[in-house]
Image 1 (cartoon, rainbow, N blue to C red):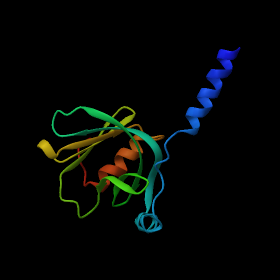
Image 2 (cartoon, helix red, strand yellow):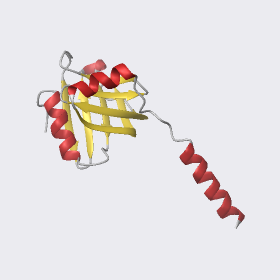
Image 3 (cartoon, rainbow, N blue to C red):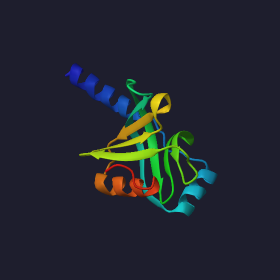
Amino acid sequence: MRRLLAAVVLAIACLGCAEETSRLSSDQEQRLAAQGITHRANNLMFRHTRGAGARWDDVRASIVVTRGTVLVHRNGEIEFLYEPRSRRNCEIHRDHERIRISAGSGKSAEAWSFAPPDDPQGWAVNMRHVVGGGAR
């Protein structure tokens, strides 16, 4: 019985410790809202890689997709940003329930992979629209 109680207390404590990543400044919120937010998900676990052939790391972050921007952030700190004036190559890939954002090439390449909370196809379509098509 004590073990069960200890396990329940530990589980509740872990839930309370979940890292919050969704906060944006009022300026960021207004800019994104003005563009028309199509998708938003908070506190997701992303797999992130940098450079060709690099190992991946798990990163908890939030994502906002508008008609013109893909933003991965941690409480307003930009982890990944693609917007109309972005110059680097970017592609959106979907593999079953996961979406991968691939940007750059060679040593400057990076990828962000995540499982959206709903409608992976809709997320992929809207994100491809932002980056101008990209891989299917």
